[in-house]
Image (tube, rainbow over the protein chains, first blue to last red):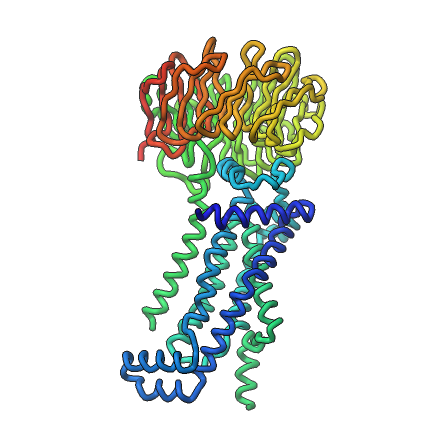
Length: 258
Length: 358
């Protein structure tokens, strides 16, 4: 079921794009990523809208009053917060449900890219069973896995002066960090537990993505990088990006001056 | 708060590990199927982290390489081959070609000159070892492991090269859609076939009267002139052809990935075809009057040369490797089965099975 509904359509779309642009797999992965991000844009926009509404609610006087009044009674605090959510029309799941829905898409994409690489007999045999009839597999395979200095089927390393530098890994870490920084609205109360959790997520996510990009084939690392860049671009197009979050010293100096 | 940080960190670590286990060490377990080579007394089996030498009389383990625990990065799936002087040559997924003592598995020499996996077996002659690599290179080494020459194709080489033994000719199937004929001494190109329309992963087969048979992923079996590489005929199949052709008399036998077994005459006309229960990857084994082959569904078939069924027997696991024979036994190497090597009688009864020690 997973293969039929998720992996196969994504895989065949990737192969179709590859064929359309004349056999450049790296470029096909980038275009494929852009297409998927555009298709899931309504979910992304809904997530951003939900986060904004949540932020506004948390900045409201009512919310601050409730927090102060029931700071020693967690159960009552939770009840009053839920009442306020309803009153202000905020869905607490609105900011994370779209992310959860996108997870199967992410895993499916990962599976499709993995299948497309087909670097071993088992992978190629498995791939042969997933291809739709209208894809001319005989003409396409094996896919041309060379893109710039990379073999897309192997982890990426750029050899400079005898040193193997994982440039894609570095870029993935940086762009993951950037994405979390510019897309996260500043917390109303930095000491609040949810703000602390968000801070930890923003710290560990680049680390995790870096580990994955370092170990997996560079085709997948390109997907992560392209996805991050497109995500930031989408957010910037909505006019919601907080560039100054990237420079905390500049932010805190400005705050001091104000 | 410290506990929350720890929990969050652990969550991310587990998530990262799940991704990574899907394609680093865990991927080797699903990379390919076992590769087997048999002589009169011993079966040499490459599977995952080890190469095993198995006593063909009773299925007992003689030795394994590496001798103790799996070594990081080492994986073997290409069937080993044995030279005339008793070296066992096996290529690894760690990009290294190994020469082992076939009596005890100790390393005699290694060739680390490749930068990609060895998917297929090397070809060994009295003087040389020809090792095809997934980087598209064919490495020609002497029997001490010194590189003599390298031939470069445009795409990976996943098939064992062949020679007809008469001329100094070497024939190499490439995934770049071409069959190459090389001078076995110097590696110079004798001819390059026309674009055959699809990738080749099967070793070519020498027929009679100077014809070479090779199957492709273009749903075809082709016959080429061995002297020039020109296409003589093309016979359609229902799916990709992964197996090599086996010839007996004027008939060639091979299977396709839709599970159809074909018998064609040497002019390319179909004598008969037989639909089976699963994908056929391995080359059929021919005896005087029977054709043996196996399918992905784990069934071993025996038919006569006219396609009439003789017997079939199920084996635990999926079978992609060709069936081999030695003496009066047939040997099957299933993937994901209860045993790694199964010995059958020529009537399909179980003789013994080999399960690697843990």
